[in-house]
Every structure is written in C-alpha cells, then in structure tokens.
Image (cartoon, rainbow, N blue to C red):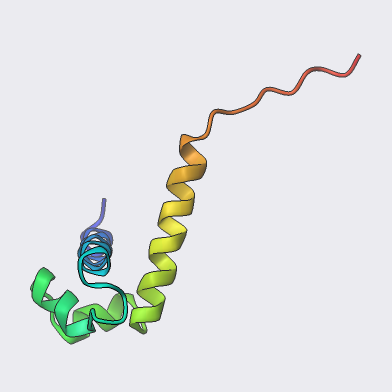
Length: 78
C-alpha cells in the first residue's frame, strides 16, 4: 500500500471509530485530525469534507460486504 493510501485509510479508520463512539454530527474534522495527527491540509488532500469521508466509509463497507458474500455459480444452460 502506498503512503498516501495508508494515510487515507488511517483517516477512514479514525473517522469510523469516532462516528461510532460520538455520532456523525458530534464528530468534527478537528476530532479526526486529533486522532490521526494529520494537518488540515493532509485531511483536505484526501477528502473535500466530512460528508465525503462518510461516503467513502459507506463505499468501503459495501465493498467489504460484497467481497464477503459467497459467489453463486450459475448452472450451465441445458
């Protein structure tokens, strides 16, 4: 994983934890920055807003759920 990707994943991990603990509305970008040690510039390099972080978290969860589903084999046509 590349360094930028690792930072992005770290932001997502911290945000997810904070959203679960405090709720989305009560979690600020500054809370996420404090948890990760990144600067505002570092945050905004990866995400335009807190809403964009939530969208990325939803996408990540959906991708993980889709990957965890057993694949159904289709029967060959008769």
